[in-house]
Amino acid sequence: MAAAAEPLDYVALGDSSVSGTGVPIQESLLCTRSTKAWPKVVAAELGAELTDVSCGSAQVKDFSSRQWGVVPPQYDALTPDTDLVTLTIGGNDIGLVQTALSCLNLLPEPAGFSCKERYTAGAVDTISDAIAQWAPQLGAAVEEVRRRSPGAEIVVAGYGTYLREDGCHPVQPIWARDANYLQAKIDELSSAMREQTVAHGATFVDLAPVTVGHDVCAAPRDRYLEGLVPVAPAAPLHPNAKGLAAYGAEVQPPSTQRAPGPDPPSRRLLVRLQVRPSKIISTSNHHQPATAW
Image (cartoon, rainbow, N blue to C red; front, side):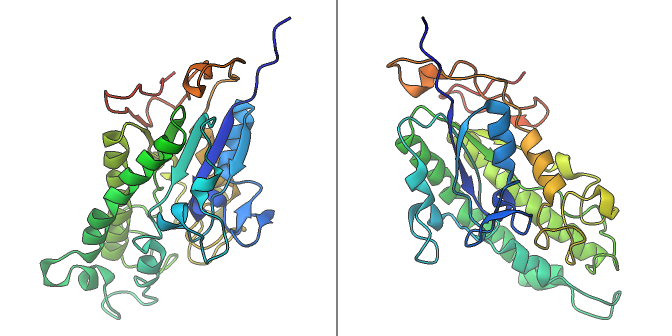
């Protein structure tokens, strides 16, 4: 009689865009982690055993050190038997939320100050510089995940489309040119994440298309991302419950389990992670890419 297959061992790392800050029910008040966090959608599809250590306000440094001196390093959740690792990180490292808040102008132009002008003064884009300086840290994180869990599939997910072209002032009080600048910086961060992910042999999932038409300017019933004043339970400028479900649905692994036996985790993984072909960015050639179904 064949031995029962073990469920896949899945570890989720990341920041509040993963943990579901503000979305009920918060199972970790310290890390503002929701029972609806998108890794739970992925785990349910896989039938996987999930260890979700994503934490609100996390930066890359919190993967290897205690966040706030209290929360254990996220890397501690990884083991040689881990089969799948997902992560999103970077927004807090470059201060995206703070940048967005600095772009607020309750009155239309010219009654205020443009954040685009402020961040690009002297022909130097300080946000772009911050992204470029941070990006290699993501590559190093991917390599550290691989060192700790050499048989795991590693999937990095980007950030969403928060603002449509020209924004929607005064619904969201950000001038058109500043809205375009802010979304361009979010896209630039995701692009840097993609480049580092591919360069280090992992798989990147682009979540920007998922939120097109469901951004902070959408009608409340259509939003996946909440605005500066949320109309559904979620933190400002974060995914709501529908957004978390949509993010999780973008990674749709087939129902599979790993085979029993002494083989290393990479051989026990019967079917690689399924990612929608339109959203996947292939891995580099020196590592086997995830299968697109």
